[in-house]
Image 1 (cartoon, helix red, strand yellow):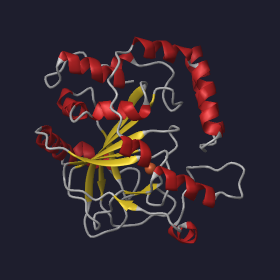
Image 2: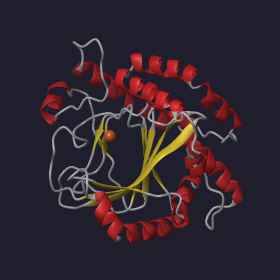
Image 3: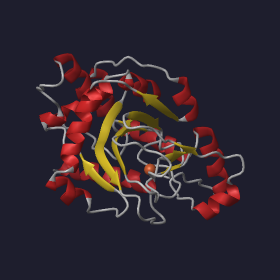
Image 4: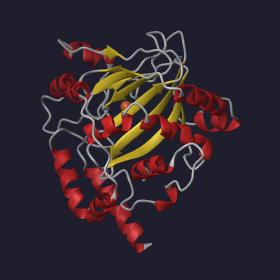
Length: 300
Ligand SMILES: [Fe+2]
């Protein structure tokens, strides 16, 4: 208990002093790696996942893929079962008015189909190629955006995420997403850095997580291009939301349903210092034993 208390205090302190910028934040993370030497030992014990280098993803920070896998239909079925459940209606409507978010419970065997998806199309290898060896699946959620209202100061405004110095969010579309369905909209890594500098040029610390309103963007947007990640049901989008400005769920004529996976480094101080072995998978009707071994390296 004493240790937990100390751990909580250390992590809270790091969260508090993290500048979430391009310069000081990586330094702080480097320091945290020394403190959490136990994580290093844990990582050495992990089986190594083959890395696939995707130059587009590395260069731009985002990438859209199409997969024709048969897993897709199983994912739709399970997801729509959840969307229609009382539990979804109760849990998902609590927080943001413009976005209903529901955390998927991976201890339920029915939900192992979601893990099967990341083993297909070399997705897990591409994610390791981008983030390195110590990758953790930190969140898996179903999102339903009604796209009816706009709330300024939230994720409908341009922003970058702050859970790590780099991360990958994988969005699997559960409905067709066109310009009228509040698509995720992204600025490349390189242009995001330029935009961040323009926004903060007078500040010593250039925070990445501060929101940029549309009005402010108009004044600093020359040569900055916003890519609208439209795509049909079943398309897969990989985005480094820590390094690419983005927004989504803006008002439109149609609603949007997506599945969101978040991958960060195991050294992020958003995660507990010790891996929770009770979250590991020991048996599955959907995953083979080799697949379970790979997935368990991702579960923290
Ligand atoms: Fe975000």
